[in-house]
Length: 322
Ligand SMILES: NC(=O)c1ccc[n+]([C@@H]2O[C@H](COP(=O)([O-])OP(=O)(O)OC[C@H]3O[C@@H](n4cnc5c(N)ncnc54)[C@H](OP(=O)(O)O)[C@@H]3O)[C@@H](O)[C@H]2O)c1
Image (cartoon, rainbow, N blue to C red; front, side):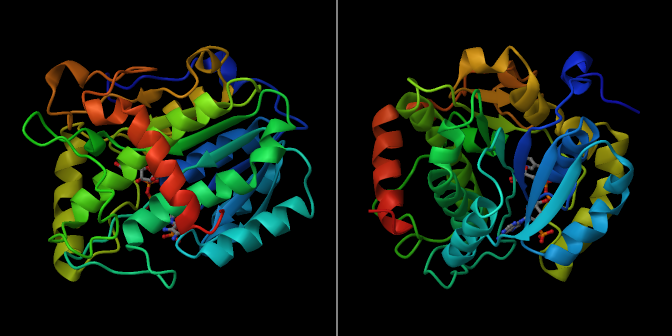
């Protein structure tokens, strides 16, 4: 049963002919990324599926062969800077334009001890943010050279925190070396960084035709969070039917609506840099629960352009762009 609170993309944009257009979707083999990819291919686009597991991408994409558009799967592990660079090289060896970059993939470390990538980054921040940052920066010229191209990055309601605890970026310890680790706080900070990045990029690109967006997709019935310990997996499996029955969560199709609106609608480019949120019972600020395209985040730290610029400067150094 569809949740009556879901905000749907105007169907006219889901009928647009996308023949000749090229998109990249990260994390395209699962959940929101899969639904976004399938819809773009259905409308005639060529979608490059940037997947950590190429086999998984090829497997889920099998039904796409009957659709109007086309796809290819290229390996991209966002928690590995060299893999991101290799992906961009492979993409640019075949494509000279990019109509839309959907930085969709994301994960949360389900253990309450930090895990570090081989580049030395806390894994949640690396896979959800640093990898997307490098990917986007390396593709910026291609986006600029494509008329009216769009970039979106998946954030989450959790970036907002609560009135008592608003998440913020800890520039003195982004890698959780000197703070007591909290995996969900690490995820929230990565999602706050994503909102700030979309804002900073919009400002940097305001003289171009590229537009940017950050997105809370809703509470998706996807594979999200399934990689945890046996206990966490058990709790998630047990609670999923109740969450679904009580209509708290949405299907992955419903959760792809905000991304599709940002990629395809005529309205979204009027709000470049803004935060677009599906409805969510998880906002502690009740007035935010209905979501909005775009919506004002209740977290003032998500509007701090000084932090946004500082974070971009630091991240450039971390990912080797300086
Ligand atoms: N589910 C929700 O309720 C919810 C709420 C708010 C925000 N979000 C955000 O929405 C986005 C999509 O999530 P989803 O619900 O569709 O989850 P999902 O079904 O778990 O899909 C996540 C995708 O990200 C990929 N991924 C994870 N780590 C990666 C890495 N290091 N490199 C490349 N790809 C990687 C996964 O690949 P594998 O299959 O190989 O693991 C998978 O394709 C994420 O950014 C998530 O944070 C989700």
